Length: 422
Ligand SMILES: C[S@@+](CC[C@H](N)C(=O)[O-])C[C@H]1O[C@@H](n2cnc3c(N)ncnc32)[C@H](O)[C@@H]1O
Image 1 (cartoon, rainbow, N blue to C red):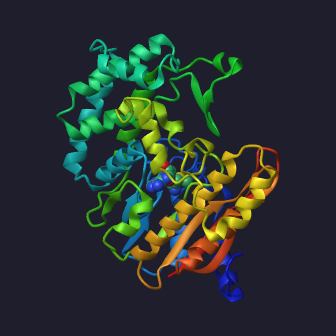
Image 2: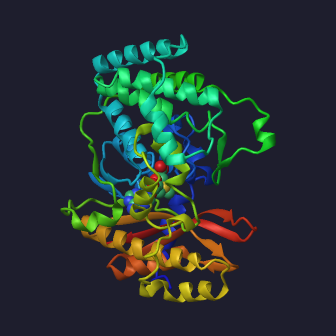
Image 3: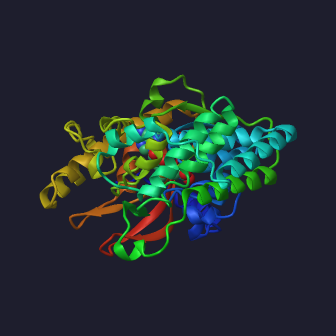
């Protein structure tokens, strides 16, 4: 299904990308780098990966497009190399995180000193156990969003509410408020009864035997990490990190900015619940105040999980996906799976059209993607995406296997880099 690749080109690019280590194409590759450890985003990759792609494929670009920004690995790595980036990201928590990282990169030494003073003061307020009583509005919204589900032990929950009142007390200091919001949001999961293992789930009895750290201690550690990272990066003046909108499916509607290319990793078609996995963070930050708010996000995301499937998902099956949707329909245990697959490629076609509209002629478009298996049927996402991107006018130039993966049942899968050119 993939378009033809010039073999000579393939060898050259593959050779240069061989220097990429398997860990660089996952989140763990960036451990220890400034900004990277603020939020452990399993779906992310490392700055090293972004740099390797730049070296292999780009020629002095000024500005790139990142439609699926996540925690901002691409724009932050690019900014440090003097390259601007326009991005979209559907999760407002991650947008706040990226906005704060970008603000840190631009701070003058005096602004940094001021910010560090503020961070130290906040640490003090949290460490002396300052309890500005509770935060009734947050308690009410918890009940409205989660009902009786208990995601925290009760003392931990009270602590979260009191941290929210510290946050409310610094609302007029936008930057400090933002640091504090991110420190709490990035600590919530670890302080809860949930854990991230693929998707977020309740900790098992055995896992619960290990002590759960207090959210105040976790927040203090996060604030120290922010201080440390602020001290370790140089001030950048020129490169711009610009939010273009929340939804990559709408890129085609924006003014075409003519970017010099794309480096991105779309959701994999593997069932990851991007929004549900961050329901605690979204609730704490005020983006969820009733149950149906989760549904609004579900409509916006690129369908990639069973829970994203709605009544209208899968009504349109793009030509490139017809064969696989039929095959999976005939063998699958859950009727939502073929609709999820159809929805994914329908959405990715919109994104492909947006990318095509937004990049210059000759621009490289680099897409990190993995395949999957449903009901024993292999879904070659990379091949179908190659056809989808090919049909909007992007030529597949190279395809590099970055890493071997496995399905839950042990079927061999891979992580690949698809390189197109407009
Ligand atoms: C594989 S992750 C990208 C991770 C990123 N490369 C990083 O290092 O952090 C895919 C991202 O796409 C986002 N996403 C899903 N649907 C989207 C949409 N319709 N528009 C914009 N972003 C979307 C998810 O929230 C998720 O953060």
